[in-house]
Length: 216
Image (cartoon, rainbow, N blue to C red; front, top):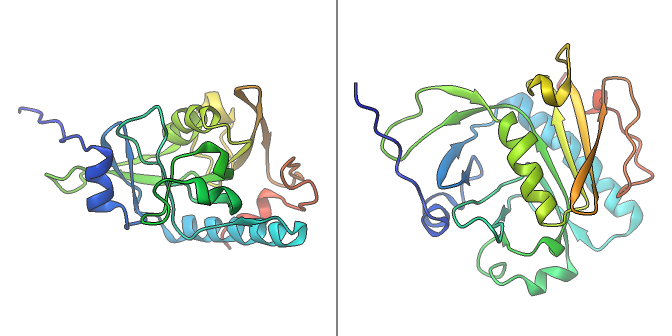
């Protein structure tokens, strides 16, 4: 049997075909079909709501858009779509694409990003998805590098099913909340388990546990 690799997409091709579909993102030209589950959306909604409340309490001029793409400056064929993203409203006027498309190019516009680890579907334009995988590789590795390069001060990884590799969440595998705090140009990571109070520099007054985010 001959293996035919999927056709790679440019950033522009991805935006034209999939930019308004929240289930897709692009990594190095490869289409990621996230196809989020109900529990994934429950966790994303829970955490987005809590973050929004903290923004209101602090009276920050920040927004939490429903859908948004990030175009990393150093990656020509990558379009990241965080599960939750917090943007500086004032900095949006400096974004070159924002008035026409919900696309962020400048790291200074992004105050905070959150990824919810879940199952994902590998896909190409020529064939339907044929196998499932988990997206923890992107969330724990590739996106850690990209978000640090963009200068995003805090990045949260909510692994509510404990899907991440042992090198990232330890053994035994269990639900894990990883808070990445930017120190210099790299992230310092702090992990939280069920029952533990989460401490955040960007939201110092937040009262949050991983338990609060889980589906019932």
